[in-house]
Amino acid sequence: MLIIGSHVGFNKNTQLVGSLEEAISYGANTFMFYTGAPQNTARSPIEDGLTLEAMTKMKEINFDYSKVIVHAPYIINLANPDKEKLQFSIRFLKEEIHRCEQLGIKYLVLHPGSHVGEGVETGINTIIKALNMVLQGMDTNVMILLETMAGKGTEVGKTLEEIKEIIYNSEFKDNLGVCLDTCHLNDAGYDISKFDDYLKEFDKEIGIDKIKCVHVNDSKNELGAHKDRHENIGFGTIGFDNLINVIYNSKLENVPKILETPYVDKEYAPYKHEIDMIKNKKFNNNLLEEIKSDKIK
Ligand code: FE
Ligand code: FE
Ligand code: ZN
Image 1 (cartoon, rainbow, N blue to C red):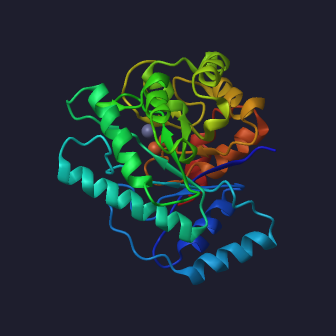
Image 2: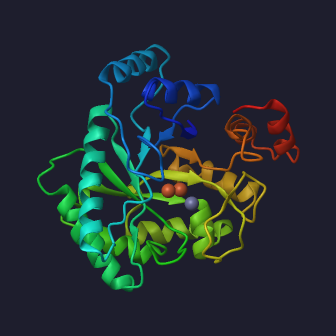
Image 3: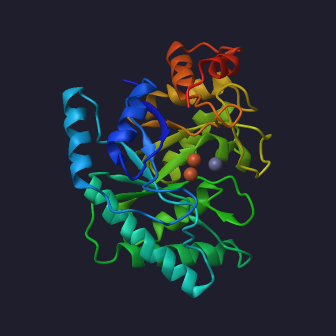
């Protein structure tokens, strides 16, 4: 069965209850959220009452919570050469893992980091050590999913080899997995029209069972652009058919697919329409117009 959703909000008054309602309104059967604003690390405490309320609702409607995803804020940088900033990232990521545990979440997506000019190898080594420090003594079931990156600026994790090196050298391999992002793969230079070849290579190098989430996004930029600008499904350089092949790939059947496509005119949420179109497996050229006239915010 197709497991599909999008990123949704998580605000301090409704928390998981609000996130679930938003996901349901899109016709989704899973979702991803940030435990606060994606771009900062201000976080309010998790209210167990709200979590319980959401859990009860999910049981009633048979909504599978086991693959719901949390995304860590972008400003965590485990490759940061600045020692103080690195310590802050490590501390914050530990707290984020605790929040996931409190919420009953198993999968936490993380951008591996940016080396800020120190070079890829130094960056990778810093990430490996930082992840060890984060997971040391935590004894957690939460799995950190390293996201494949576009290679914008000094981002680490733009190639399969870089991701492999981090996991392979970690003391906590069981706590590490991977989140593929189709826009990032395209921008990093991996041709999504040859996705089966990529998966074969991934399986050989890392093991396909490490893939626990796929971010499905089209791209505004051409193959290998190292840009990272997401586009609505079928309206970018990857194209509808190539994304459908990823979404319905039999080897990734049990892996949740999460849309992180842009709001239309920065205002209207596209997810209900995009999920519909994906379920129909037929591209709708008029989709963006329909989203605008539907005015879902
Ligand atoms: Fe991400
Ligand atoms: Fe992503
Ligand atoms: Zn991105």
